[in-house]
Amino acid sequence: MIWAAAEAGADYGKIQTMFADDLTFRPEFEEGLTRNGTVEAIRRPYRPEYDRLKKLEFPTSEYAWYVEECGRAGLRPLTTVFARGRVDEVARFPWPAVKVASYDCASYPLLRDLTRHFRRLIVSTGATRDDEIEEAARVLQGADFTFLHCVTIYPTPLDQLHLARMEFLRRLTSSVGFSDHTLAERDGIKASVVALHLGADVIERHFTLLPPDGTKDGPVSITPEQLRSLCRLAHGGEGDREAWVREHVGDYRPMIGQARRELTHAELLNRDYYRGRFAARLPTGQVLYNWETGPPA
Image (cartoon, rainbow, N blue to C red):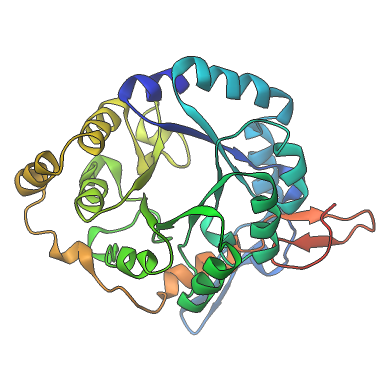
């Protein structure tokens, strides 16, 4: 995957610092909750999720190899840190930047921890309220950071992209991008190219060598061929992007949406589950969530 992404023209390759032992047990998600026909909590039982994640772990003992292999391929290595207790461990390796997941944009203690260790942060803002994003910008003041707009609906319909959100983010930082979770088999790279056309500096996409049903993220993951086309357009001129959008997308106004908006019910449900999904484990047995003050384990 490293070499396929590099050969397609990608600039960064990202892994996840995500460990099953950091997963938190929250009883409301064991069965989920539906009241009067409205879902109030999604169903995501702890044990099956723990078992699934345990099989997917990429141990930190392999991080030196990963960083070096990315260097050999010509990729800059990245990782997303999902729990504060992992920051010091991850910071031992020479990452040029670190990623912050959407649900941690408002985890200000985590942001402060990361700015102490890493030169650059790339922060997704999906499922985060405007006032929380503004506070995150204040916390990150003086740091080199990018805000990525994203919509935390998987996959994201094209008419719910709200790419105008990048205008709002640009008031807070000079570097703005888009994390694209559209359906790859149906929508290809359309949303990403329109985002580039509208001025995005960074595009993040899931990437796979497997069929769409080969992984959990497969439906929102692009292929090497799609990545090659996207990178060619990203690294090319605006005239090429404009021509591509005119030929392959046409009227992209439904993708623009609103610069300021309320989160949808689906986004709030995902926020409710994913914010707090991981936490640091303290010696007392308690957990420290990423937004809570106090020293991580």
